Image (cartoon, rainbow, N blue to C red):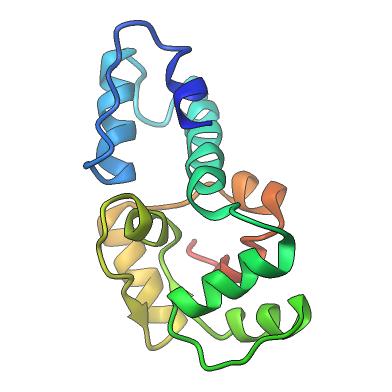
Length: 147
């Protein structure tokens, strides 16, 4: 999955030990995309969607939600997608950090509230594309208003 995305960019060698932000920054530099340009934003949506699917779409819908709840240290048991979704709505995490937890083994930081997540996300510029999260459906519960 991930290789299919990168194969569209001749000469680019992905480095799975880097964070998603670092990897996309390398790709954008390699392809000479200006930060914030239409092409940059379009490719970021594709990249983010591909990365999330690669690391998180591991089973059926319920299994995916249960794995996410477990990774975020939520107390279960969660026997339905609805239970998982209700629990996830209360959690504040940066989605790129969530992907990086699988990509690099880093621990996912949970924030006490939306304001703390918003501050962190703005400071680090780790802003997951809303289009990618909404298209997936699985991530909608983790979306927070940042701007």
